[in-house]
Structures are given as structure tokens and as C-alpha cells.
Image (cartoon, rainbow, N blue to C red; front, side, top):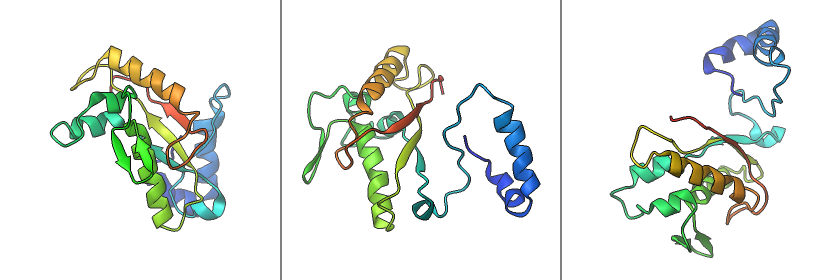
Length: 167
């Protein structure tokens, strides 16, 4: 769950604003298991908090239809082999390439130890290019199978939240 930017000023100056927000947005839902509450993005490396990243290969696919990489299989985790070689790393799907871009940016900023949690990922089931129930099912099922493997840059489980809506 994320805190809206317009709340940050009040949170910084008024502890009761935080308490009220928690009461209305967290405590009001006792059956929900909240794993993270994102509040701004400073001091991640020093606090051990993860970077929350939205990863949508769908948008990259639609945006690259006229570019060099326009293979829907790369976006849907269905490519039979390497699509993008990058030195010693080989990318078979666009999800890994996007997540590893975040890892590279963190490393460049001196925060290579910051973990990444994919706060949103998914595929639209209607309303756009390549948006179909079949593609959404393929993407989501393959994403679930894949996240236990990690990426070419970082092995290990990736924590994700699937956004399941028609966009």
C-alpha cells in the first residue's frame, strides 16, 4: 500500500495524522495482511526497506512495436531462448530486463544492497493492443512460475503483487 504524496507534509509534522491514516487505511481492514506501506522513497539503503517498483512488460511491448524488440513472446515469458544478450547475461523475457534495469540504477546510485519488491505487474485483458484474456492469463501464469528464479543479475525469489484488472 502506498501513502499519497499529498499526505507526506502532514505526516512529517503531525504524528496524529499518521495515526488517523493508519486507523482508516490499515486497521479498518483486519482481514488484510499488509506487507509494506510505502511512504516516500528516501533512505532506503540505510533502513533496509525495499524499492517498490511497478513492472509492466505490456507497456514496454506496446511502446516498442516499431523498435528493434517487438516480440510479444519476450513480453509474455514464452520466448524459446535468449532475445537480448547483455555481456554475460542473457534475457529471455522483458520482466527480467526491466527488474535488472532497476538493480543497475540502484548500483549506479551506490545503493546496490536495496532489495526490489515488484509492487505491481500484470497484463491487460481488454482495451488495447495485444490486450486479451488469453494474453493476461499467459503473462500472469508465467510470471507466477518465474518469480522464484530471480533475474540474470540477481538469483532468488522476487516478491510481486499482480495487478489483475483490464487496465
